[in-house]
Amino acid sequence: MSNNQNLANNIKKLREAKGLSQEKLARLADVANNTLIKMESGENKNPTLETLRKVAKAFGVSVDELIN
Image: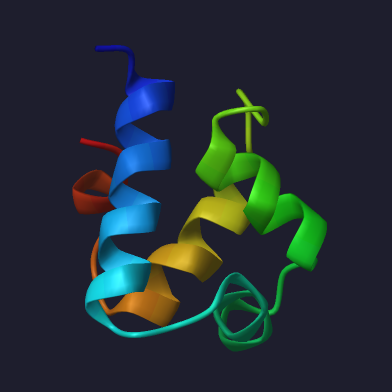
C-alpha cells in the first residue's frame, strides 16, 4: 500500500474513531474542508508538511503516525 493510501486510510480511521465529521476535523486542524476531503479520499497525493502537521495535531498524533 502506498504512503498516500496509508495517509487516506489513517485520516478516515482516526476521524471516525474520534466521532468527527470531515468538516469538524477541518475546523479543528485549521485547514480547508476541501483539502481534508481530498487527503482522506487519496486525491491529494502531496499535502504540504504544514497541512500534515495541522491534521496530526488535531488528532493528537505525530506526523509519522499519521502517514504510516
